[in-house]
Amino acid sequence: MAAVDFPSSQQFIDGEWVAARDGGTLDIVDPATQQVITKVALSGGADVDDAVAAARRASPGWAATNPSERGALIRRWADLILADVEALAAVEARDVGKPLSGGRTNIYIAHDIINYFAGAADKLTGVTLPTRSPDYLGYTVPEPYGVCAVVIPWNVPAVLTAANVAPALAAGNAVVLKPSEVAPLAPFALAELARRAGFPPGVINVVAGGPEAGAALTSHPGVDHISFVGSTATGRAIMTAAAQNLVPVKLELGGKSPNVLFADADLDTAIEAVVGSITENAGQNCYAGSRLLVEGSVHDEVVERVAAAMAALKTGPWDADLDMGPLVSATQFARVSGFLEDAPRDGARLVTGGAPTGDGWFVQPTVYDRVDAGMRVAREEVFGPVLAVQSFRDAAAATELMNATDFGLLACIWTNDVSRALRLAKDVRSGQVAVNQFHDAGVIGFPFNMQKDSGFSRGGGYAALREYTQEKGVAIRLLAR
Image (tube, rainbow, N blue to C red; front, side, top):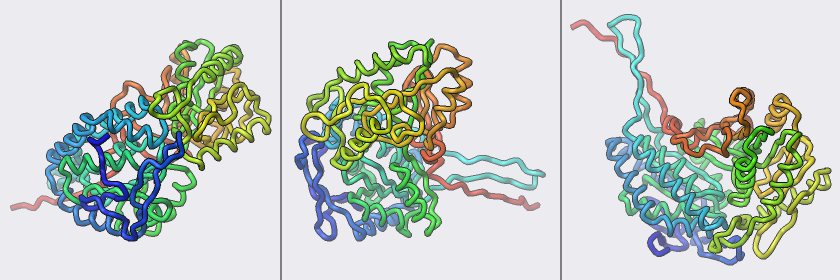
């Protein structure tokens, strides 16, 4: 891991590793052993002030940098990440608790996102507008906001760092990133590689801390744009804070994504994907396939096969590289345990799992059948390996169930009937739809869109660069000479 080492008990501000102003530190804990891995600086309001000030100083020069040069520097950052994939994978996997292979996948994804926006940096253009006579000229110019605050959670920190920081940098903004205090190590390691890549001081800053640092950053008068990934409740609070400074916000919030399985689907492929969609990262993903909607004629077979596959999964610490790791923290363990207690009490039938297992914050992969749309396990985001199964009669009933939550992030439709798939894709209220696959495998630049209480963001997709720019319109009357 030495290749991506950074100083312990510190934070990254203005191109340097520095301690917190008050000397405070934060223990980072391995979720599998509940032992302290290392310490980082516990950033407070004064540290956020320093980071924003550094970003403000760096912003004009970075915005004025030739976009091709910005892109080349971002690509150099991506190259350093690719050269240290294994070390970075270990950092992320241990910090979050996911298997090493999951950490490796996340680092490759982060690299690809950063590399994508390296190429996009000099492709950002305005438009020339039609005029009512040849005596006028009208055009638009996309301009960076200035200082972008980025606040991300702990579940896939490397990917979320890449998906939010890379487009902001490519568009010419300086960034202050606040990763979760639960799992900040991968973002710090990426910041160290950015330092080595040669980014000017202040262009990238990373502060760690809890609610105090987050509130200080998202309410800071020196911030020009906020990107937040996390819970719907916190997203609402951030919008309220941003309103005081009239700062634009993009929000990537929760999900309750359905896998909709019709009887004519390839069940072998679908069942494997359904199990992976709710157990990858122990179900701690906003797009996790936490609802399984099954056509009645294959319901019993599908539930039996899914439950058997879930029960066969092996859990263990990150370095054992098994099928599933623990939940990330005591807080998350308590939250998921609450759902495991409530679901059978509400009338759901436990098929498999439903209990803690082993040492650390592990829970069994869990399936509940006979779930009613009004049950908490069907409506709320669990953020754990807990699958709620519902049955439907026909496509109309399936559509009604798909739309029966407040969230609208991802819907996955499994059927060999193309017309039915297209009709459901049109009728579902979701920012993303996948057909005969889970999520967006194989699509480059796929937008991480969302609707309803899942927020509003394009999260790393082909149009993400636009989210980090403001458009200036220019109208010119051409004078006779």
